[in-house]
Length: 202
Image (cartoon, rainbow, N blue to C red; front, side, top):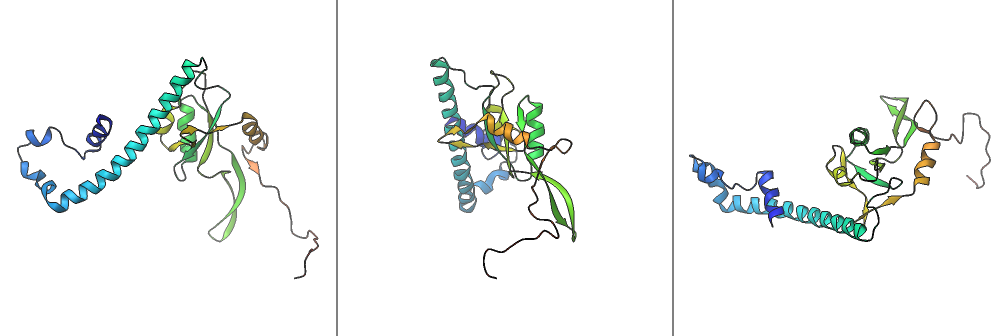
């Protein structure tokens, strides 16, 4: 209850002392109208639902950490990689902010061509739009700050637990990057003038 109430106070939707201390109490009168109450109630319900989900997710993460400690296992391994969901078109921003926090980040990119203003231009785009891979910089680094990082939407989870990525997968993606480009290059199957045979009738 306190978690949700404090979140509402931070959001500015619940006033605790302002009404009693304010000299202009009419400024809050609109909250008492039926239309105002209905509008605020709808917004508050949706907000509380999101906060309850966030609280349950955080509680599950804490419980998982406690179980890991009791079993004598470390919470996070240096070789563990995790999938991170970024906000739309914010992969590079998320990458920079996560690196600044000491995380190891792999953002696979693809060198390709895009049509802009009627002509084809060389571009470098994320290989997996809105996704990147992350690993702690050391054994003690927590994953908790990831969710509040600018550009990040959250960790990809299955059953409430962060989804892990084999290090071999990340290394394979890095090996495909072309030196000097920092990106994978799309393999060209056909070029102008390449002969081909159709296996089916036109």
